[in-house]
Image 1 (cartoon, rainbow, N blue to C red):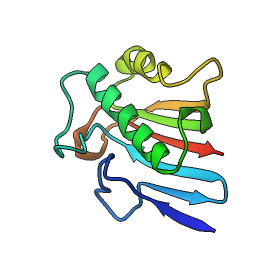
Image 2: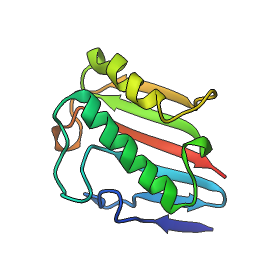
Image 3: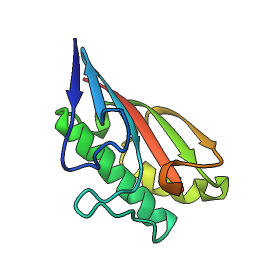
Image 4: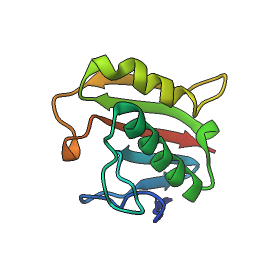
Length: 125
């Protein structure tokens, strides 16, 4: 069974995709960028503020599926500049407890809306 997960507490999709898909007990969340869902504006004051907004958006999608960060088993982090790795990690780590999920972190040349970071997650109930 496949169920679309959608919430107004995270940015609406900017293309032909869903915020997340729940299949059985596994949630596949699309990548989140730092769009403030209340204003529709990008939060790009600095990499810390940008990453905070990304994590808030992920949290909102997880909540819409009756999950939280403890359910996350895999993350993918895409960043425009590997020099931002430490600052992104500092914000990212606050969302996870003693046992963070598996993940990869890669530098890419361009991200949607020319943001600096995009993160997607997979979570399991």
